[in-house]
Length: 208
Length: 221
Image 1: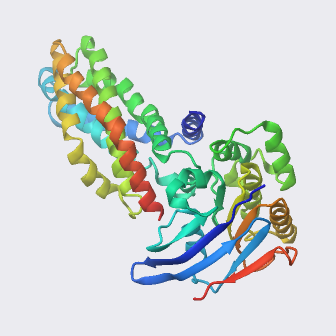
Image 2: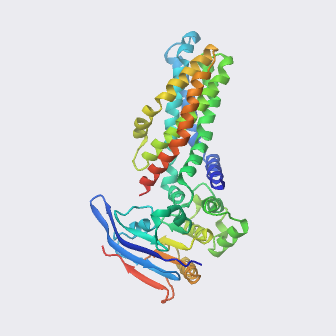
Image 3: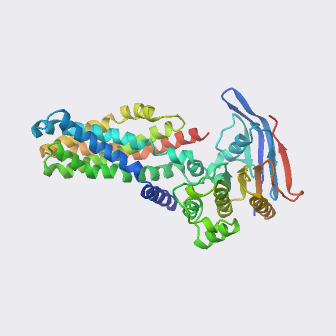
């Protein structure tokens, strides 16, 4: 349960001479799903990376619980998970090993927790195969299991539904709703397939 | 501490599944050193004079080959990104990665070096000395090289740039290392150059991971 909100104030970010973020301000509150939309190249990924502290905006700041995240980046990262469009999985390790190393960095994991997260994202059947042999959608399900396991109140998701079948997209919607319903925050750049109760959903349109 | 153990274990496990990143530089080292007797002269008395230089230059080049892959795969699949966002100190995680890298490349090289030395006329009595100097020296190479590997992450085909960046930095390691090896072959005390090598390692352990972490953060932006 998170009582904190995330606020971005007037973010400006340049990539070379391209002005990608032109004064973006947004806020997300506990229990809320913020859907980022915008045409391709509008800067959704850049915005997510700026929010989680990977990209440094030239101007503006990101506030978590009213405090600039730059003041305590490690503390902010401990409550945040960012999932890019590629799942951060090693091709030569099995799905289960990948999760143990990836999420194990953030908190101690038990085998039961791992099993139940894999079951929840219906990844149990291929959990012991090397990730190299998995399809893109299967990898995505493993990454979703990681999302569940890390117990971070703030989820920053970049196209979480890509490569997933209809059942998988419904799964993402269910996980996101449940996470928000538990009083947490989700910010997701997603075009379609996200079904969340209307009172939880906010939209933020990024101008190109 | 648990995080460091996980990073170390993961890299060791990956190396077991995909050993070529460690085996290739080692094979390269053995091949290069055995070319010298063929190219110069099979006379051991002559080869013994150049043996320290040959061993060290070959070790350096083989270390550069291995360094190219230190962070590359992790950068490509988003692992470094997750390291940076894990809430753990990136500096410590990269130190653990570099330690794993040394265990997988530097240490094996030091262990097979006497084999290459034998082909160059190095007496058996100098074998422990050669392993010790190359072991310590390759640790310094891995640490200093980690800065170069991190700096060249964003560069396509960064291998050559990596060499240009790292080689000047490791000249002191080469000087003291080959000095120690020369002394070991002559059967003299190697303490003085070894202590200087040790000092370089201590300095590198302290500063290199900080610099590498800063470079990795820049490459992630």
